[in-house]
Length: 228
Image 1: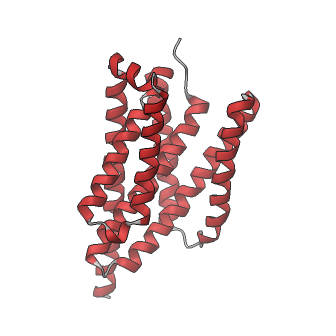
Image 2: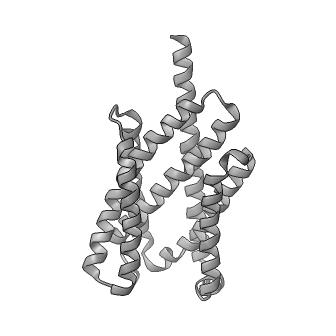
C-alpha cells in the first residue's frame, strides 16, 4: 500500500511537472507576442519579409520534429532548450494577433480557452474510459483540418471558415483529453527511469502546449473582435 501510494505521488508530481513546463512555455509565448507587437520596427521587419516568416515557420516545424523524433538521444537540458526556443519563436509569429484583435477579446478568449482546457485535461486524467481509440480518428481529423484551411486560403469562403473554426475547437478540445490520458500512461510506464521521465515531461508539455495554442486560435476566430 505504501509503495502504491508512493508511485501515485510520483505520477502526480510528474503531471505537475508537465503542467508547469506547459504553463511556463505559454507565459513565454504570450510575453514575447505582446513585446513584439509593441515595437513597430520589428513588426515591419518580420511581417514585411515573407522569406523571413517562412524561415521561422520552417524552424518551428524542425524543432518540433527534432524534439519528438530524437527525444531518447537528447539530454534533458537540450530538450528543455529546444522546447522554450520553440515557445519563444511561436510568440514571435503569434504577435500578429495583437495587431489584428483587441486586447480585451484576446484576454477573454484566453480565459475561455483556459477553462475549456482545464475541464478536458482533468477529464482525461481522471476518466476510466479508454480514450486511446480516439487517437487515429483525431489525427485524421487534424490532417483534414489542415487541408481544409489550405483550401479556404484560395476559396476565402466565410461560411466554410466558420465550419472549419467549429471543427477546430471540437478537435482540439477532444485532443486535450486524449493527450492528457496518453501522457499519464507514458508517465506510469516511465516512473522507474529517472533520466527519461524528465524528457517525457517535456514532450508531454509540448503536446498539451500545442493543444492549448490551437484551441485558443480557433476560439479566437469566433470570439476575437477586430481592431477598428
